[in-house]
Image (spheres, rainbow, N blue to C red):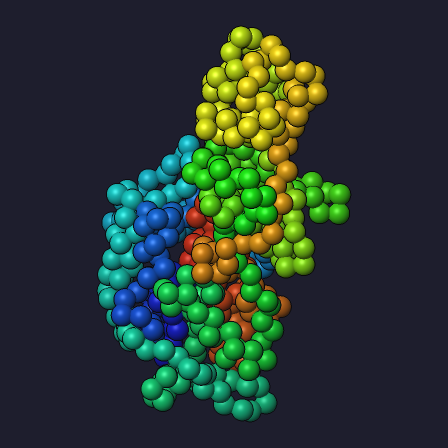
Length: 407
């Protein structure tokens, strides 16, 4: 039996603690807040999409950064394993097949999931220390630097045989993930990859879209280019006072966040990806004596169509009066609108952090640090991130489980 310290009471830390305790270790979980899972509480607007029901093989296509690193984690503790884990502990869930196979608690309450995890921790005799912030690691210098515990902000030292760091990234800092652990880990030789906001709303340079604030559109296709190669993301989006957001846009942000540091990115949006140019023209001309907005209301929100028509100075025209050039301009605006993205709304509004401890510094089969003996790293503190859909929480649970299994 070993004495294990887990730093951080988010999903990966909790799963690490539970797994380590089930394997016969004495476990202490240190949490800087007065409660566990503070970020979990606000995930998905409080609904908590804790995993996805797709086959685990499909998860790798949803990972944005360092997918190969996650092979051992995902296959050791799959999404179906996670669901079974909660089923065994009497947490009811549901699969929303028409919503990208996202998995939620049956009653759409993240608190139910957190309470279930709390009970499992208690049942496995995990000691929880609340309102304690770790300020440093205790490291013993020998042939190999070895972690022997942690130092709290109060100066108190807590010794352990092994330490698991599960402190998260820098997104939603008010929940406790402020990135302070990065500095500590860097001090002991870990390479910290620059952090970027991921799954975050995007700012748009084109000021005219301010008139579209509040307009939402379903199933759009957002395209951008990198060295002449085209990339596409499909999904729902929303116009805001600062730019654009929504599930589709959040996904896009994770792929372009690093590129935005050096330059603006041109996004091309097809608001009607399932309608051909010819069918669109037929819709516009369906009732020749009507104005364009009235004809488009069958396929697009009226307030959206109105702004597009105003932008093209076609608001006074009836469909039958459109010239060929005007038809082409309208098609281009609806099928390939160019918007210039000049930034994100930042880490404070990001769902996850991209960046963190380099995966080259961690053994992917155990989550053990290659820089410090007896140290393990899990979850968002590592340079891994994924699209929306429950994939990031699965990363947290899977890496946490793998660390807990190997301490």
